[in-house]
Amino acid sequence: MKKITAENKLKINAEAKKGHLAICVFLGADRQQYGRLLDNTENNILEGSNTYPKTVHAAHILLLSYKQNLRNLIKMVGNINDGGCFCNYIK
Image 1 (tube, rainbow, N blue to C red):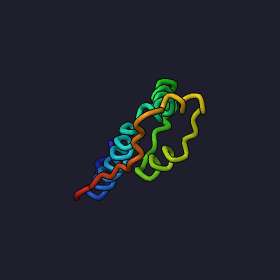
Image 2 (cartoon, rainbow, N blue to C red):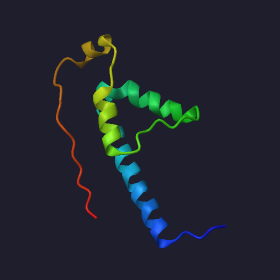
Image 3 (cartoon, helix red, strand yellow):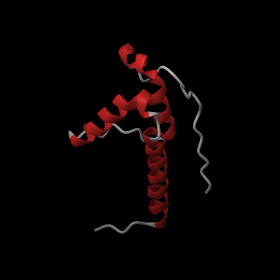
Image 4 (cartoon, rainbow, N blue to C red):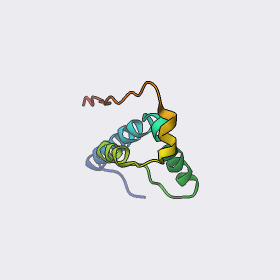
């Protein structure tokens, strides 16, 4: 069994933090607007395919690029909150 060096440990921790923030942004998306995308991504895990975004940028692009069925847009009548979401990462 290989020992993990301090340098490798720092790299692993940095990648884990990036992935954690990406998943937080992705799962924090509006369920009414992105519910089908979130459900499909969760179901892909059960099928053995990890399609979760790995970075915050990838999560953002995935949410912006997501196309949904026009019939689902009819349900979104009323107060639509199209604000941005920002998170601060303090090292």
